Length: 141
Image (cartoon, rainbow, N blue to C red; front, side, top):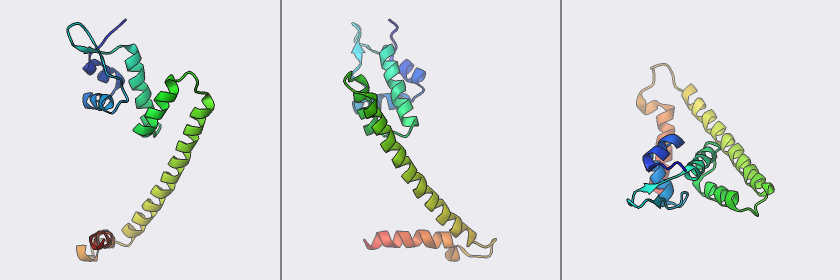
């Protein structure tokens, strides 16, 4: 069986070494095995697990959701329907975030359209004023 050090595992998984260590700290990755020399080492199953984590992040799952996916993945009692439900909840969440981002983009575009070509001072700038209004609201809370 092939073994690797944490730096090699991180490189092969396409993540930063500190990210790998973070995954260990928060329990996404199990405590590494140790050789007689006391060096930590990882094997192909660890690499597969890290890649699973990376792919779940690419699909928009949070680290908390990824923990749930991992526990479902290793539980032989889990049925595909459970994974489907989790995926559909994520799709609904993504669609909500898309609507929110479209609203933000529309508002920002509207503010940008109110700016004239080099004629307004920074104090008159609609973007700055909108940002200042938000800041003033926070200050008064």
